[in-house]
Image (cartoon, rainbow, N blue to C red):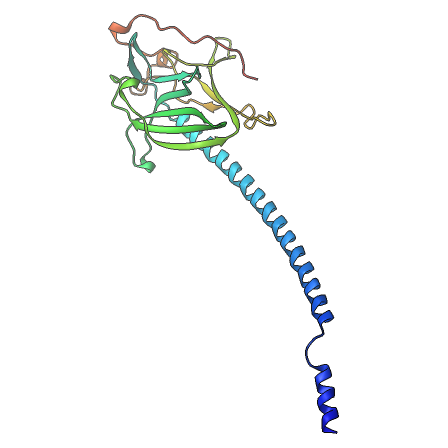
Length: 254
C-alpha cells in the first residue's frame, strides 16, 4: 500500500516535457506581442511629443519675434554714407547668411532696461536651417553696427525649413509695398514678415502673419508733441544730408 501511494504521488509531481514546451511557446507569443505593442505605443508617443515640441517652439519663436520687432527703436546709427535708421536687413548672398539688425528697447523684466542691438541670422548647416537670435548692449546713436558684436546665441527655429524675411512700408495710397531687404533707410519698416515653409511639403507655416513695428517717429516727438513728427523722416545730422538709396520693392510675398 505504501509503495502504491508513493508511485501515485510521483506520477503527479512536476510537468512533462510537452507541457513545458507548450508553456514556453505560449509565453514567447505573449512576450513578442507585448513587445510589438509597446514599440508602437512608444513610437506614437514619441511622434506626438515631437510634434507638440515643434509647435511649442514655433509659438515661442513667434512670441519672441513679435516682442523684438514691436520694441524696435526709431534711432539713428552711423554709416559710411552718413546717418541712417538703426534697422538693416540683408538677404543671403553666396556664403553670407541673411541677417536682420536693429535696435530694440530693453525690458526691465529681463534685467536689461537699456537699448540693445538685436541680430537675427538665418544660418544653414547640413541641410538644417536655423534662425539664431543674438544680442548686445547698444552704445548709442553715434555707434555703427560694425562696432558692436552680438553675442548670447539662441536658436529660435531649426529644421528642414525655408526661411526669409520681407519688410513692408505703407505707400501714399495706404497699400503695402514689400521689400526683400532694408538698407540705408531713414525710417523703420511698418511690418516684418517671416516666410517659413516646410521644405518637404511646401506648406506655409505662418501664412500671412506679420509682425508690426510700432515706432514710427523719433523719441523726441513724444517730448515735443509736434504732429508733424508722425509723418517726418529721421532727422539726420548736417553732415549726413545726402539721401540714402532705398531698397527696391519686390512686390507682395506669395
